[in-house]
Structures are given as structure tokens and as C-alpha cells.
Length: 379
Image 1: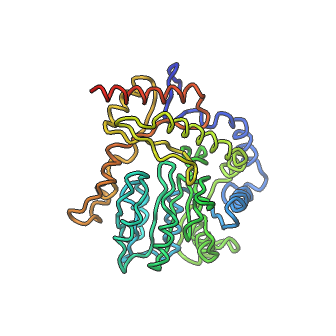
Image 2: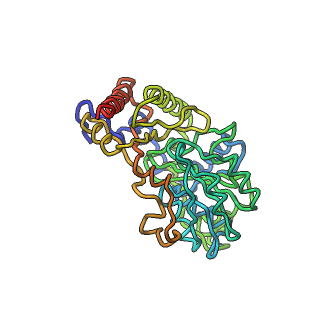
Image 3: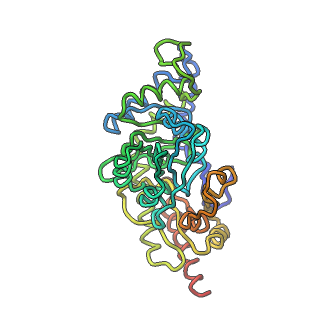
């Protein structure tokens, strides 16, 4: 992809440019390794070990994607037909799809209008005797209110599955993302904070029995000791050795990339304080990873067009609440509304925040947003 001079894309084509030579070496190393082990080999095991160290000793099971990680955990938790799983009304399709694909019912809870994460009061309101799991999701770099959700799950005796697909590297009140629930999941798809040039994800859990079952399920129900002995019906959700080696290489610099994202976010938030018609996310670093920086704009489409006219990319995630999607509407109670999710769908717009943005690019993006807000005041 060739960029027009001065263009600042939302999805940068050069995200892994600094690691190009290493990636090429990894392809050769794995491809010509005499062991010819391309999935679930020693590199995957080493990546799991390194992530385990950084997460206080919790077990890490690398798998095919973040979506697969959710499926594996829900399956391992015994979610099946007749069960209910509480999910946010605002977010990505796998939050509901993984539940439906196991024959269970997603129950949608509205979000907090400030953080856009699921509202614990709404979660508690929709719990029923059929609820098996509460599945909050961190979103747009902000962790959900995990302390309250942990207490609610304990109070009702249900499992807590933490969708940390966008939250890796965030720490809330001293506890890393993914470690508040009975299990958590990560996604390594390229746009995430610990993204890579391919699909992949991981399950994180402090429950040894749950970890053992997830390990079996990711590899067709095999336990890893005896090949072709299938203890249960599982999935093909195995991790790639080339990508494992690449992630091991990038793990050392991950804190620096997170710090740069946080630095950019703090600059934006300070510049956008008090703007009319454009609201930044809540400030701070507690419970943040800043893989996405999303504004709430009263005239979102006008802001998007304003930025595009100045060569600045942006992205509007989730145009409809999950219960308003055709795929999931059958699971929504007739006449029900999720007003805060509906508002977020109409108003949220993400702006570039990748770590290799130059300072002058960051300043230019901020200036363009401020210019739009000033023009809005004059309308």
C-alpha cells in the first residue's frame, strides 16, 4: 500500500515494519527445523510460559483466535442448551456468537454511558436461575468494572469469563487484565495491543481443571500425551509456531509500545478536555491498554468526514447493538431497549493511536478534532 503524502491511516500498513527481518528469519528457522513442528511445538510452549510468568503464574493456553478462546472456555465451563450467558449489548459479534454456537442463550446487558463497558447494575438485573456465566468485555482500551462483576458472580454462584481480547497489558487495581475472572481470553490479531501478523489468541486461568480441559479441547480432545486418543469431542484451535516465535521476540518491547500508546492517549485527552460535542474517554492509566482511542461525538459522521478531508483515518466500530443485529435479534426480548448501547453505536469514533505515530502526526490529529469542535460551536 502506498500512502498519499501526509496521510495518517487508521490501520497502518507498516505495523510490523521494524520487525520485518526477524519475521523472515523466523519463517526460515521454523520451516527448515528438522523437527518439522509447525503447530503446538516448543515455541508455543515457551510463549505460554513467558505469558504465565507475567500473569502471576496463571496457566496460559495458546489457541487459534480470541473467538476460539471464548468458545473453548465456555465449552470447558459446561455451557450448553438451556443455559444463559450475560454479555454486553455493545461489542463484537463473538460475544454472542460463541454462546449461540454452544446452544445457549445470550442475555444482553446495557453499558455504562461513560466507559462503554457493561454496567454491573444491568448485569445483576438480568441474572436468572438459568445464568451460567457472566462474560464482560473490556472495550476501547477501558477495562470493565471487574471488582464489582467479581462480587456479583460470587454472590450468584456463576462463573466469570473475562473477555480481555483488547485488554492485554492493562492492569486494574494491581490485577492484570484476564486475571479477574475464572478465566480470561486474549486476542493477538494485528490491531490488538499485542497483535501479530495473523490469527491467534490465548486462554488465561488459575483453575487447573479448567486449563486441562481447554488444552484438550483445542486439539481435538487429545491430552497431548497420547496421540490419536480422543477423550472428548474437541476443536482444531492450535497455535502456529512461526507466530509463537514472532510473539516471543516482540514480548520484550511490548511494555514500550504500551507506554507510547498511553502517552498518545494522555496528549489527546488533555487536548480534548472541555470540547463541545466531542467527548474523550475517561482519563488515567489504571485499567487501560489503549489499543483503541474512541471519541463520542454528537455528529460522528461529520467528524469522520472532517478528518478524512484532512487525510486522517478513523473507524466507527459496531454500527448496531448486538441484540439489534439480525443474527442475534431472535434472542432479544420483544420491545427491549439498550439505550446506552444504541447511543454508543451512533456516536463512537476511533482515531489513530498506534505506537509508531510521530509526535507531529499526533498533534495534527488532535488539532483536526479541536478544529471540528470549534466549528460545531459556530453552527
